Image 1: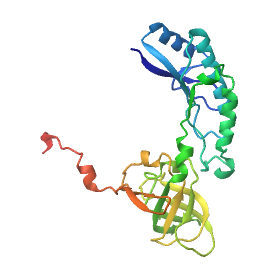
Image 2: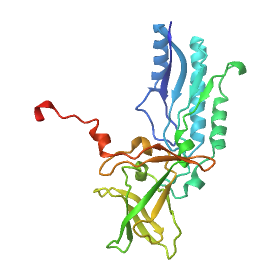
Image 3: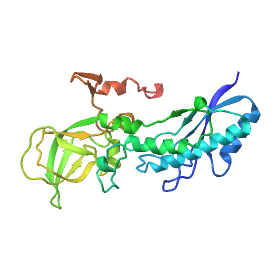
Image 4: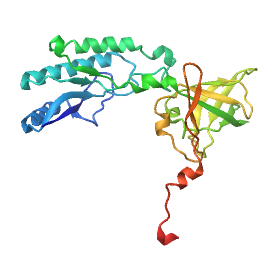
Length: 285
């Protein structure tokens, strides 16, 4: 009985940084050699091929080029070994409506629609020389684009101050330890209560004792008082899986249903949670 496996491939895509750390390179012939060795060993069954060309890709045509190269490689495998793949995995990287710090346009304007990604992928996969009834399953890993808009972070203003350059600085009770994506996104931030007054240049800091703890760089924002709440939007991807308890404990997570019902799905942490898994060596007791 042979185990079914897939191999990961990396490739050159014009206009995209190379992701050559993972997988076998296509252009150098490394991927072809891997397939040949797998077949010659006769211990594994090649079921699919996989590639991932990057993250937050704003050019749908990059996927067309990727799909085309994957299709041609699948044709090559079939011609050389008679293997019909059961799936082709094009990985992830679809952009969400968030705005990257390097972007000029807002994320909602710059992020391609799913249909544009789909059109490009279908054009590339059209090069597959497979009978219609034997086409491999297409697998996509579009996690960020699916869940980013589903998450919100609610923070509370702890203090505000006037910075030496005249800007207002807000200190919040949540920092980059909770919102890791603040390092590369210009998150949309809105007050959670009614406000009035003029907008002014404002920087939003977290509570951590590090200068990198900047939740939002300078933006036009109304005056806030201690106790007011702010909502950071489109934070559903990567943050809960990468957050940590440096200086401040992680908060509760709640889910809001389509009918407006609310349920807690993760409670707030306590010091006891960390003490429970710590041990003191016998020679220190």
